[in-house]
Each structure stands twice: as C-alpha cells, then as structure tokens.
Image 1 (cartoon, one colour):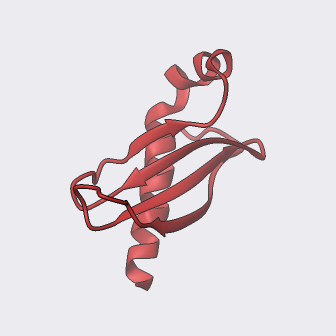
Image 2 (spheres, rainbow, N blue to C red):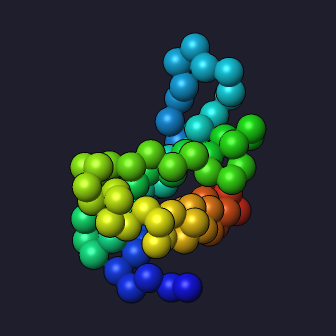
Length: 85
C-alpha cells in the first residue's frame, strides 16, 4: 500500500541523556504536509518506535490504516542516511 502524501521529510541524530543506548536517530514523517509522527531508531530499536505528533482523534483516523507504512517510510529514510554517515 502506498498512501499518497506520506513522506519522511527530515531526520537527525539526537543524543539521549542518561539513556541505555549510545545513539538515537529520529525521522519526521508528514501526511499531506502536516507532521504526524516521529519514528526513532537506535542500535536496539531497529524496527522504529513510533511517536504520534497529532491529537488522539486524528490518530484514530489514520493509525489503523497506515501505522506500518509510516514506519516503513521512516526506515527507508534512515537506511539511506546510514549510508551517508
């Protein structure tokens, strides 16, 4: 499935303070130009941890439909960036 308007727009390494991992890479995902999720990756979280950036009613309207796809879009972006670093 390919949801039109869904794309990874930015990614960056963030430094976890006092965390249990050495690095975290966050990918920002938009749907129709609006930030809907941030997906975090680390050496221990390779599937991606999804953090919604919208209200609950919006989440319910889209999460069942595209949650897996959001992680896939973010993972592809992250894998491309890994090759650069």
